[in-house]
Length: 293
Image 1 (spheres, rainbow, N blue to C red):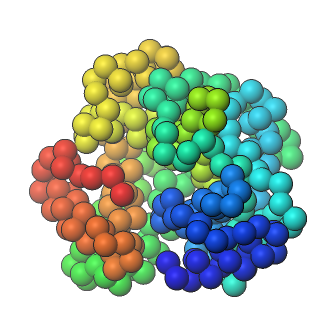
Image 2: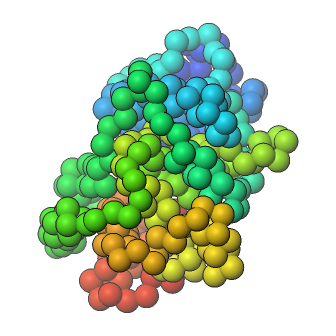
């Protein structure tokens, strides 16, 4: 956290922005800060490994805007984006509203329906979706996690790779957001719902973008049955009715647990949440007590 703050200060200096009193919005794959002195959000990646994805984000924002998809806009700053500061990748974005007014499941469905109807332009090369991206490395790097838990997760990932490879998808392959959920849809000042967090864009099965909304309703109870039905009715496809849904759910659930594990020691709530989720994975027990992080 302290390192991210130092990068924030240096990056804002290069962009001629005031980092004073910037608030931390979230800490995960990126440290995300909202500036107090300007309506700008600063995203700081963990390492230079995020450079290509950051460059792609900027292009994706322009492409989606041209295609009529409401999406977060890059901020105009006095530096070429993305920046690399102290080995970390930094991008600047126009703040969407207050930053804590989220869109609905129906608004997400409408955005995805528009997005999935687009064809990526020739100049935009999207990587193939890899549901297991960095999974093994994250497990091994989770120094706050017991060896037994790391071995369990590595074995589970190996098994799920085989199950995923055997899937036959019902929807066509094309551009996907990669982390589509209501947490990545914010309302701007006009009340319009806009898509954020574009770094996971890829070419893959559209079912992947429908998965989290289904899981939030089915596994965790974070969406009501009525909210999920409205999502399905708006988009036009129910991923839970597809026979590959249990495999995709297990894949996503496992990578979510791995993500929490890598934050044990850095995020105060992570240790307890990781232990709870690991117990559910091992026992097949209820996920209803899982809390968002």
